[in-house]
Image (cartoon, rainbow over all chains, first blue to last red; front, side):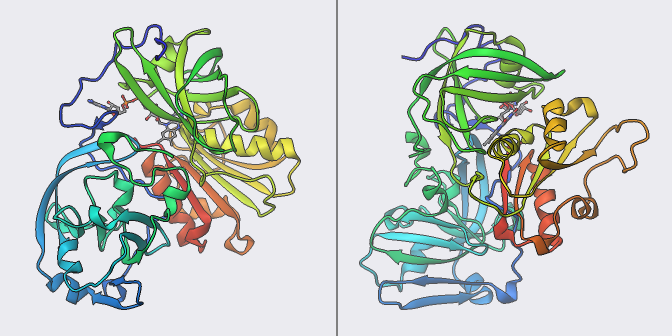
Length: 197
Length: 239
Ligand SMILES: Cc1cc2nc3c(=O)[nH]c(=O)nc-3n(C[C@H](O)[C@H](O)[C@H](O)COP(=O)(O)OP(=O)(O)OC[C@H]3O[C@@H](n4cnc5c(N)ncnc54)[C@H](O)[C@@H]3O)c2cc1C
């Protein structure tokens, strides 16, 4: 049982019904990353998915943006406790990308330009629940928000939505990525408050 | 050191460090100790059960069940004005931690270290500078500390003390400087960051902490100056 904190509560924030526990609403778009912002020219950008056989599906920027894309309107939740409601994105569904990928592995490691990694169960990426997003609010995605393209997995804490994503590698086990090795939860469901180890 | 569940913490001491920031010492039975640079979560519970949680960097490090925090008031905020203006010795709260295994400095590392702080971003960097001083570490340390005015610097006296001993210190003032201050007053420019930090040839490990925009600007400046992005670590406080 929590001990009461004498005198606390006078400035309480109203609870927001759409927010997972422990989150507060923000209207701006905070930037959080482990290091400086990489800037990747579109001519050098590519995205790939590599399976256990070493087979690699790869898209250049032009090939990628020619794929069928979707508009996504969704709430996002950062582990540092801000949430932003009704954000709008455009991107390619992971279902589309995995259409031609043969794999029996259940886990994915997302790799980013700049070296960031994050692990996600494949199930969390399929079924219309994840995208590689390249537009925010109708504009090309800013580098500080992960442009040219980032993973978007809005039902998990936002550190899973790897910025500057460059590829996915299938893996047999749910090996931890960057923040997962550094103290954060292996899966990161905001509604279950899966913040830390 | 692994994260614990919520631990009850008793406020053991409070002291002002600026007119709007306070150092809080907590007694946390069961605290597992922490590395310099880690943070914890604070949970406050009102009498009717209402709760709020926020993250705070830890100014102390090493073993022991005493933990030091420093909190700066965010005007209009919910938790920081409580911790700075209302909380008193013997009040209870809860903490969870230590958290974060990336924004930490290890005593065994002898590479040059560049610390860049904006405002309350000094807290985890002070933990590193204290650990470095205490250990008599051979790693060359530099600190660039940006504050609005001289009176806004958290831990000012202690930082001056460390600067006389084990840290090379540069102040940057964004609103008002001491009389006769030779440097320009205003936000840090890439040139000023480059002039006040280790050159890339020294391959420093850089830790940058403070409000999000400050961190973004300082990290960009380090990369523009030629530092390897993989050697630039950042902690953003939001705001
Ligand atoms: C890893 C980490 C370490 C940190 N370390 C430190 C530290 O060492 N020292 C320190 O002082 N701070 C630190 N911080 C920042 C700290 O966690 C808090 O964000 C800060 O104290 C402000 O909290 P608050 O409750 O006072 O403000 P909040 O109530 O969270 O408000 C912050 C801002 O958001 C606005 N806001 C928030 N919610 C609402 C709402 N519902 N409606 C309207 N406006 C709203 C407020 O007006 C205000 O401008 C750290 C943050 C992180 C992520």
